[in-house]
Length: 109
Image (tube, rainbow, N blue to C red; front, side):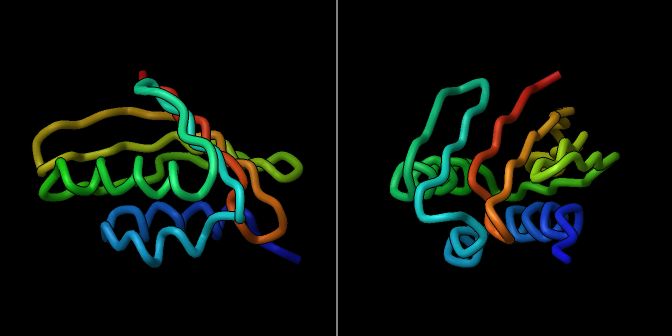
């Protein structure tokens, strides 16, 4: 059985490493990403959105504070530390298809 909480943690660790190639292996062929800055649909747009984030920060560290699983979805309360100084509290709602991420909806606050 797939442990979706472990997959979510793997996503956060990979995101924090800023390794775009490894990050994209975690997504399905047609993922979506929605956050307070907009919507990215499809692999090319999701990759571009993440590249933009990585290009605009020196460091980014995601620390899960709590994880809740229901069906094929994990809701994660996370702390995002940007460049070692700027802290954001975010909730990511991650929907999986099998062991790959189909969508992420991120909410700041």
